[in-house]
Length: 240
Picture 1 (cartoon, helix red, strand yellow):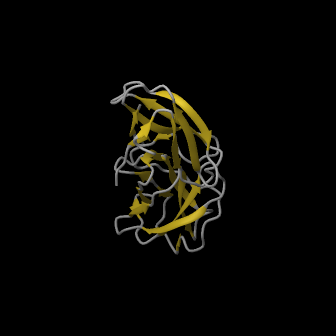
Picture 2: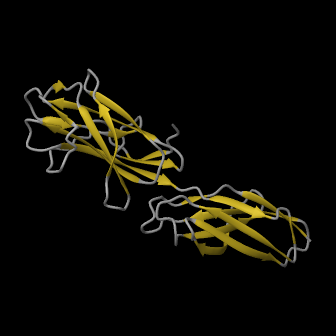
Picture 3: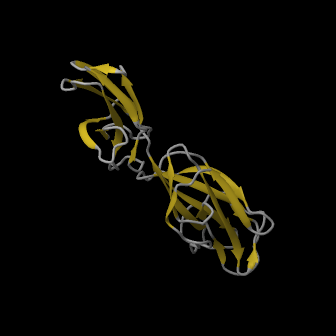
């Protein structure tokens, strides 16, 4: 698992007291030792509450369950996922606490999500919940045809960003010279038809063979469940 960075780091435990919520009937314990029930949750090796990952990367959600000073083994914990900023949640998986009361669950790649871990005690007033937030940075795909190209001709630049809610997201094309230290924006368009974008650009002032570096950039957009990100850089050779 490649973890880019922890935006907000919390060392375990990250404990959330019992709250009034509806727990899955299968995620409960028939009995617990006396004492307050405490569930912790964290992401990655640092037990972060919020973590930034690249598109295509997953994470590990881990924590522990205790009743007072006693660790609780064999408890079934429901892990729910909520794609941000949507309100609907879905069951992502079930984790079982080990003999020492700890648990681990692999979180698959996907969009930015809020994760919540829930357990229901048969003796308690309601479910106990802890959780964290995964923020996923988008990496647009990018394609340029023809490449190499000629001056006084068009090139077609296209690509895609993942869903959900990936239409009407602004994509910006940036260009620069080889090994650029400065990028300039030269086109922008909105995605359509399931996250696709396309540009047609006319080269009319390249009087000698030149290599341009091209990339696509997406800034964070309201309603789009990915953090802003940049595509790979593609060298485009343009001949007179």
